[in-house]
Image (cartoon, rainbow, N blue to C red; front, side, top):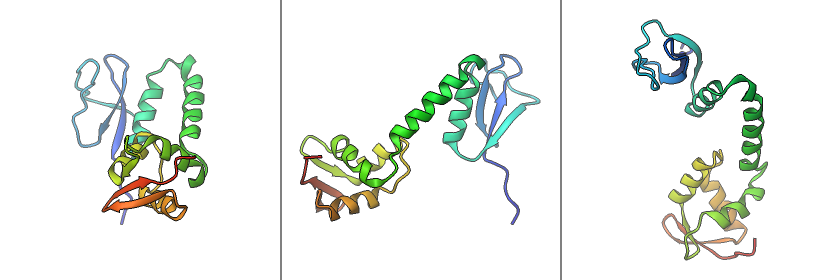
Length: 149
């Protein structure tokens, strides 16, 4: 099977010089000025919506500020993606549970997505259960046993 072209394109608006991303099957209207791009200047193609967002954000920053943006973005990603699960568990135990000390799989998935952490929520829960940090209440709900982290 032939490799498909990426799902998203980054386009430079010919009217206002604003970079924007669109799904390759959508109309190429500039979100800034509204101009329909008859002959779109495709700057790049990407498969991942996160990559699309980052690329468009970076391209719309003045060139003299881009290096600072890249450095700050890289530092942010390093903070949000600990090297291993053991470093991440205290962060989760302190941030995800509700006021009763309970957490559920849905809230954990939302937290991971919001913080751009690419780990499996069930694996995190299993590790916490094995380590004696969580006790399963029912279905996909757990109670924190140890808050000493």
